[in-house]
Image (cartoon, rainbow, N blue to C red; front, side):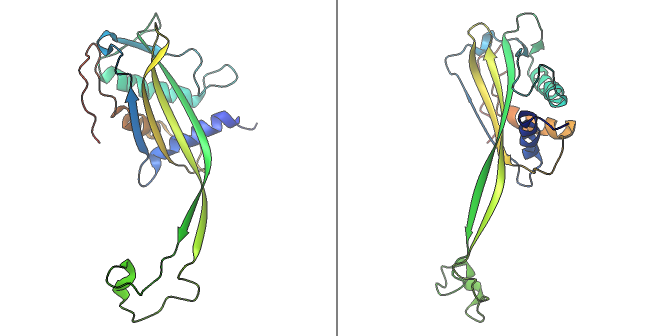
Length: 199
């Protein structure tokens, strides 16, 4: 049976955690929100990583990873009117990267390739050549929502190049991605004092 495109997008987006250079992480929060009032969390009824009305394996792994990060910050999980709701979303986008080969020599000492000192020429067609590379970029969002106000109060995002040949990411990879995102979350349960996340 074919994997639904939404599920496949989410599965692949999480692979950004396995990139050699790591994903780019960013976050933002609502400065008007009263974070001191938040002590409990739960999950949105309809998560962005679920399709056809059932919880995917990926959703289960994300829930486990997020629950661990929230608990480490003092939040208590509850299904009965939690202060914060957690939601996940992901997307894939095709990208094109163009590499232009610089002139191999002639601008010494300012040109990087000046180390060749003019002792040898590049092969024919080297200087001024271009290479076009197609790749897929994955984006994983984790949202925290004020349940009563029905408004997002924090967003963590991981963006990176994904490996479209890799299957479902392991719990370890999901843990790594979620941990990287939550490293940008500046609050603890019941506290309004924001700690500046590590850059």
